[in-house]
Amino acid sequence: MYEELAIFVLAIWFGLPAWIANATPVLGGGGPTIDGGRFYRDGRRIFGDGKTIRGLIVGMFFGTLTGLFQTLSVPFLYPVLEEYVVVTPAMEAVFYMTMPIAFLMSVGALTGDLIGSFIKRRMCVKSGDPSPMLDQLGFIILALIFVAPLIQPNPIFTSVLILTTLAIHWMSNALGYVMGLKKHPW
Ligand code: CTP
Ligand code: MG
Image (cartoon, rainbow, N blue to C red; front, side):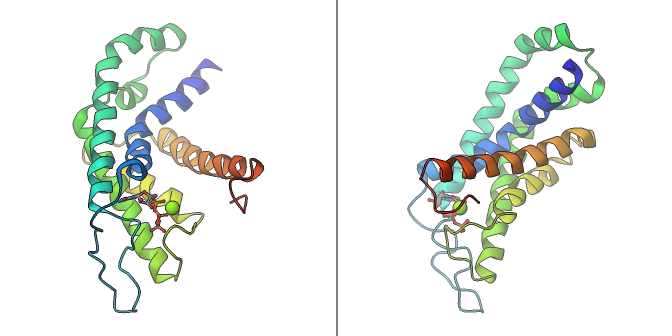
């Protein structure tokens, strides 16, 4: 029981810099767009107004900062983890967050988000309109790919992280719908 819980928590712990990098641009976005207002050959914007240079910097900064806080808290949290489970090398690998790991995950998340927007524009989805899979999977998959040169977590952690990322988006959308903030539950 504790074992499963530890795997779940550690998967989220590992994904935290990517999540923060993906969630914070909305707080500090604005200013010049990444595509500079340019259009692709299909006549639509390359990325759109929702992708700004400031948003990239904000996401990279807070994602990496998250990693710094995680790195600093490992010595304090390790004994807590050890109290409940036998800490395996696979668990240690995802637990020992470093700033380079957090940085690569942040850049990967933001790149994945950009690729998602690029595909959305090609599919004629307007900036800001949802695209259920692209919005959630792009950033987390690219974060995992970018960080792969430094760490390849045991697949159990990556699967839990990907599934949790999808579940959280769906839950927050459903909640927004129930609360009357959103028109659709997706
Ligand atoms: N944002 C930003 N720069 C980024 C990513 C996001 O400035 N690189 C800001 C924008 O204000 C954006 C908001 O965060 O509107 C929400 O981000 P996101 O949902 O990724 O963008 P959307 O507006 O939904 O655009 P898209 O359809 O291209 O995903
Ligand atoms: Mg969006």
